[in-house]
Image 1 (tube, rainbow, N blue to C red):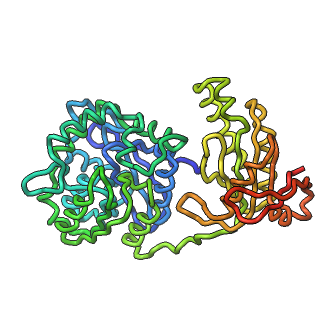
Image 2: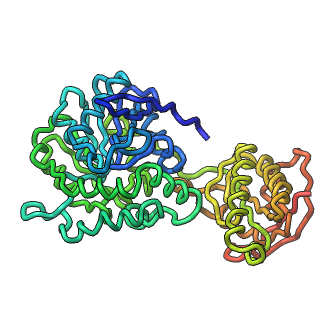
Image 3: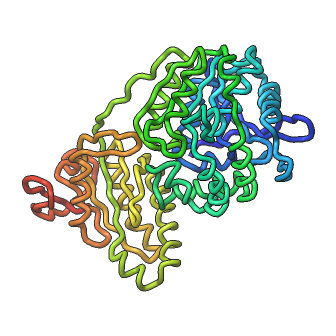
Length: 444
């Protein structure tokens, strides 16, 4: 895993504000996060970490925790910082990081803070980006985009009871996984970002915010991006922002994830990069030749029944860590965990075979047996996932493997000719959902 940037501190008044600087791009970019954040735990949430690295690839990214959240100084719940105090924190962090002028990205609940800063400090803001954000959250006679106050009054209490459990993801990021490493890392990220009481207090304050009067005063070039099916902060909020900021351009993207690092994050970041730099990143190839490896625990249901659910979850955690270490050791990529196994890809079939053999041997320390299936073919790249016939075939091959066996297609055997690897002929097989018969071989 890439090294986590060093956390430093700026000071405004008596409050220390934690911040990090990522990347060495030609422009400074200040990220004003949601109303909760933790700049170190963020790197444990894989989709968020990828998003931060992407932002840092074309900018000098400056990220921070607001006072009262994350690694910044705590504050009493009765003395939460006002919007003006939070603005002072942005200025203090920019000064400490040596940034005279920067583009500012307001993420969701960080949008009102970004709007206020752009309006009150125009000389320090070169551009403004608002992602899934709002000027006011409550409905009013002159603001039909907002939510009814009666509904919103219940929200802080619901949020307090749901905080750190993962239940917020069902609304804020419907495409996010509801189990596995990303889910676990995100729920921890919530817990260390803010306490339930802090969350309830901040949300009660957010319900009172209204920065609509200052929208016409913003002079910085502005990009407003909103996901069209966002149920957490509906797109009408974004449309209102774009209509009332004189310099704004509005882009509505498909998807329902409020957290911009879930869903098609690359498509959203393409728009941000082009707006801030004038250059759209080159299209990545959508197909690539690679070797896929599927792993599967033999008799996993029986194991779970024998040792109990709690112990079985611990075993699966150990297995997942082992699989990731082995794949990384042989220069592969874990595409996704499958509960009791994984799908990984390699740019060389021999390395994939050696990795599979190492896995089948090392899992014995966990009192498990694993089987592996490998095939080399053309894959479709699907924003962090892979698909296509080669993936389907690899999944069917692992189903045919015996306990502790590494089973491969004839394609793999042909590609590693001369490598010194030996194989045992397992004959031809009709594989479910796969046309024709396929000749399979076990690694000797």
